[in-house]
Image (cartoon, rainbow, N blue to C red; front, side, top):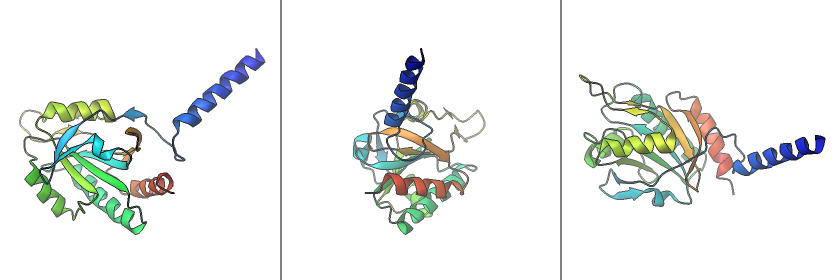
Length: 194
């Protein structure tokens, strides 16, 4: 019986070690489903464009008057911090949850208002709400609800998500609090080291 317990313990330990494909502490394990959206430059962008890359994702909308303001500010700060720390091979992806209003031109203007460097930060929109809702819920386990009657404010998650080169969401962070940025940068230093 004692040997049986030891074997189970070692099997669990081996599984946990194998699941942690990096040297950071993870808190998620979800596969990003296939998607194909439109960028702020009217170009097609899909999950295939992210294969082999580490990336950070969030869900925002340009008409938001609450959480998106600090979230997008923090993503902009994160981009600056990545440059300061020579983290050059990580893509930032902001998914709009308001496809009705957030056309590519609107997203372009929004990106410019946050001084986004579009060389590694893309803003994506899709033709319909259901598509982004399914991606948010199924791939990122992030709730997304249409705006209640009488308002234009959509309910969405406020996390930043770290996605590995195999397309697996492995960690989420508080996207509203700027003190999360140091944790993200530290994790990116670890996972992108040569």
